[in-house]
Image (cartoon, rainbow, N blue to C red; front, side, top):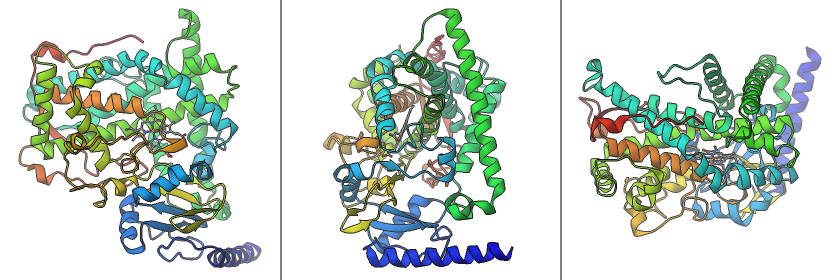
Length: 509
Ligand code: HEM
């Protein structure tokens, strides 16, 4: 015990001395004064990006925030984002892996948590040329249309149920189902929910694993962020171990089933798991990499799409003028006798601007993912030492009055006045990041979000629950790595089209 205390005290002295040395050696970005050992871990408010935006008001647009011994640099203007994601991209393209992401990605053997290097380049190429090619996106389109029409069918059934007449529905339930079914079918070729909406055991296990992973990943505790104190938290290590084992067990079982089905029916289909099996030798993919990639898609592609649509719907209910204008466009282009499809998008510019405006005000990953410096870098005139984490506060940039007129207003028309790219070419609007690590699923996400919004608006009108005025909708965010609404959106749908247009268009693929 005495020896442990002595070693602990010694480590603290070394750390404090190291921090003083860093301060003298470098001109670090300003920020709240860190405490010894824990840094700013206990200063950070639960909704981190809001907290960092507030601090940026006091300390300036480039901040230092200490997670234990790790320096995090957070930038909050488009000019600084450009420096991080374009000018200094090659020095800032590694990833900061927390204790949990280190464990679950087996030290970066996947894509999301891989450092920039030969493995990353290989896997990213596989994603660009194979998993997210225009051809595959098109081949997987029937799955998206199946899931979106299935959502519309359940909303229609639920709002017409005699017990529910005029009652508000919890939007997230329906959006979450599309996102879950779409991503599990796309990745694993499997729908865990039957046509009555019942989820099988594997599906329930899947959901439980995702929820547990999110809980572990959001931790701001010492067990996660202070490596030399890990020994004090053996329970956390066991929790990580159990989670990983559970995740691998389920993934292997699903992959085996899929392999058997593939051999029975002959030939590969279009799901990611087929592509990965088929390309395993050509790209020299280990089992860790295949499992890691499949989970990357689930983790990165599921909540983000549901969140985007929930926020967009909240804005459309708060702004009936915008809702009506989008519906007028849909009525003019599609009419009352058929359903919208993705091929209608080019004729629906206002709908596309609605999706973009929602992603400007409510980016689902407001701090993007943490990048890591592979060398000492200068950003905004400050030193960012090697190994620091760098985050871009895209939420703050999307609301910056210096680059947006009336930034807090939900006004899709702004994109008719000026066409602003959102896939990494314009540093004012970065929901998908930019540069080497830009989101590879951006086009898939845009298609799914626009399709969900288009169907919801064409097929229903949306109002707040009885007794609640649009202004009273809670627009605050819940804490977490992705930004759900703090209060799940409740809304009353009223169908707008003939009953035969509310049937699911099911496909078996
Ligand atoms: C609205 C939905 C989505 C948003 C807002 C979003 C946003 C982002 C952001 C901000 C990043 C980090 C960029 C960076 O670190 O510089 C990212 C990375 C990533 N996203 Fe998305 N994403 C979405 C949907 C998807 C979907 C549907 C998929 C796949 C099915 C996906 C797969 C990935 C992957 C694999 C990465 C890691 C890329 C890398 O590290 O190289 N995302 N996404």
